[in-house]
Length: 387
Image (cartoon, rainbow, N blue to C red):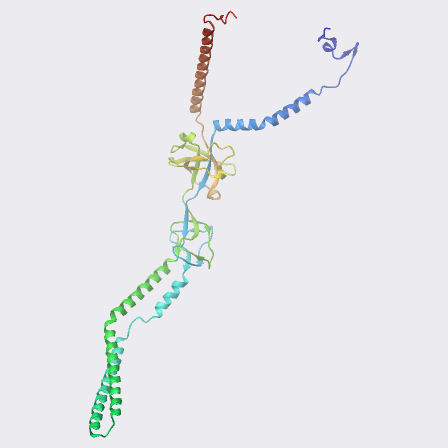
């Protein structure tokens, strides 16, 4: 049985037993379009990835962050915020008061020192001591005379021995009071140095407290704009507490995280373009040679980033940046001009290396074939060509 594939129906599909059959339009085109759409949908991730790789090879893009020169204002001593003299957004100049702090403990100690007597009235005290000494000596003399009189009367039998003992006890008491007074005078003559030393210490402490209280008020070290105020009036702060941040009036720096492969674009003066969030492109240039590498921030890292580490390249804008974009840590994207000549030379070297590799592989394959042929022509074996 023979099957023929050249039937008349195949040659004349619209003829059927001499009659013309009008068929409906073919639907093959719709199925073909649907098939192409499905194929495009399946291959779109690969196409996108290939386009991304090709774009990365042709264009040198890198993430960047805008860094403002921030001046941090911190408390030098522990205290309480009495008054805030500026608000966020205010322009300040150098040495302008920013915040007044106070320390209630230091204030209380200062009042306590001020209430202490500063000088001792030694003159009045000396006069009183002299009068007291004279009085005690007079009493001692009178007591001695009375004792002598009573002793004479005892010999005569006019008084009893008990009265004499009572008079002698009174004399001993007066002598003890006089001795205590002399001891106090001796201590008073030795104590002026300690008293003066104590007064000097009190004055030094008082002066120290006044100086520290005056130093609690903080002034601006440089001119700038208040970016953020972190404390409120009445709040207690410790030494080193961050009170506010001030943006300096200098032009901001642009920190670019460049892949180490593109280090040739990190030369000083290298021009580049910066894409702002509104789509505008601004010109900038590299101002500092690369001296460090750092980890790219997570917010700047792309989904297919080649490396988490990048060269930290510092750049500045060619023109002053507008006030609305002066935002610290603003994420941006920069683009370096493509060095087409270097790219062509690198491509040529790549093709030459590929050609050399293919040639070496071909030579190796031919050598292996020749060795196998020579091995097949040994004694007792038929030649491979004869086979």
